[in-house]
Length: 335
Image (tube, rainbow, N blue to C red):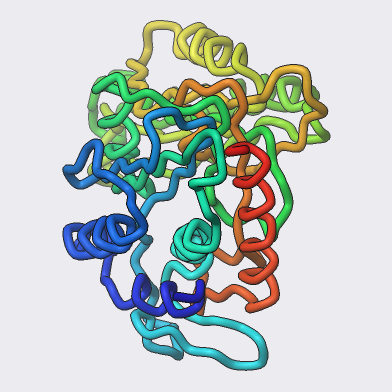
């Protein structure tokens, strides 16, 4: 089957929040069995290989984000127009999964010394449950790993880390006519945010491949009424880091700045990944590469990258080019 034909089938499965996870995993498993692959592990994840000795692996997540109401096309039907393929997950990342499945069908692995190991995960878009499941069961990953996130056919060898914090300020409520009798949790939160922004302005001067840490103050909740001094305020902050030390330093700084006026809960703390001894080409987003142990990890997928947008699409040119890239890599690493 061609990559486009496989993609059409993959898109037909509604894997928003892994709704039809079982169906898409069963489809992939059956396809690979027909090519001589054996199932090593299956749950909501799937791990398959065609040799005991595998020098290279491919990893892809089967879930997608939800689609917005402004889609003009059926998100679960592959639509083609002007050299573009539309559908939910075409870019992120069913397009790359389709290409790896089509690519391996065009290689005679009997002529190669080593094989390929394939990993398909779930819940990547929200909680990374799938990749954590594989890591927690001590899954062995090959020396070379390709993660098929959308890169518009550009080879990426590093990705940012993620640090998500929830900081809760506790105050003392009082009537708004006598604010001095209370402790305003919102004011304490605002003071903290201003100091954190000063720290961030210094921190973002640290760059790797011209990339720098980003900070987003995503959610603030506090107060009950205009005439009550608020005794509670919560802020949630997202950092995308570029070096492993930044995660620890940010946590330490946040705890210093709250100065016992708040508690800090770590929602996610995931380090960036960088291949050693290579010129860095870093993505702005986090990938499952940060979770796995492998000597050489690369991100390579279809494009353009318009993930999480309405009428998500990729170009046929990119799909075909990626197949050429995957086949070349597989032949080189499996010889």
